[in-house]
Length: 144
Image (tube, rainbow, N blue to C red; front, side):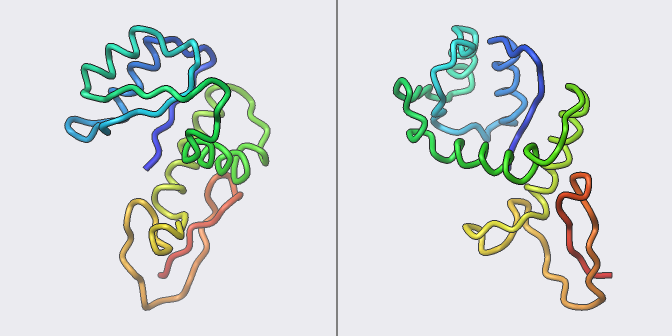
């Protein structure tokens, strides 16, 4: 599952709050591999320790050390943001909400045996329909 948030000016306090919102109760990961952005200040590091997450920054100028995140960012760009003109923060938030829903609930992933992160039941009967999502960039297929 992906979690997203949008702001024009991320601060350490805002980033720390995103970790609280992304990991409900006892579902926090053991480690966080992150880049060395200056926005990850002491507030973020304290919040991570409070959540029981061990902070693991990547080496300087080493994007391949966090390949999963780099792949996700590339996927979001290729499948979504490269094809849209964003008209502001509110518009970007709406686009990202729509894409996150599509990514988590409808987009097939080969690593998940062509299922979505939120597993779906197999529909065997009915006519196949295509429902446009993410402003028509993608479609959710189902049966009626």
